[in-house]
Length: 75
Image 1 (cartoon, helix red, strand yellow):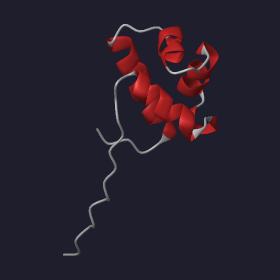
Image 2 (tube, helix red, strand yellow):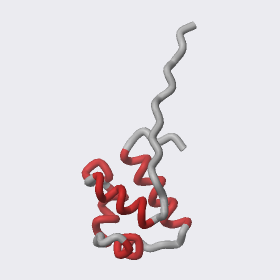
Image 3 (cartoon, one colour):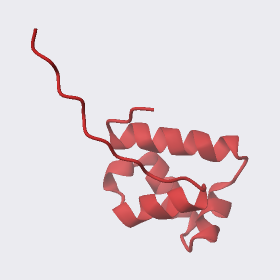
Image 4 (spheres, one colour):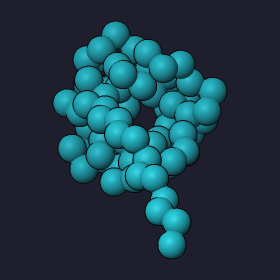
């Protein structure tokens, strides 16, 4: 999945959390966060800290992969 904004990332992770039938409090507790921190990330990701993202990813058993954008070829 191509994600290009904090909002898209938050929506995706919220959907994954719900697919796994996990409450915000469960995700938070597993990695030492508070439930309101997970809620803030899901609702205002642009104001969240990067370590919060990685803790949520860890709790959901996910990892982040980055790759360069493909260069557009001139015709």
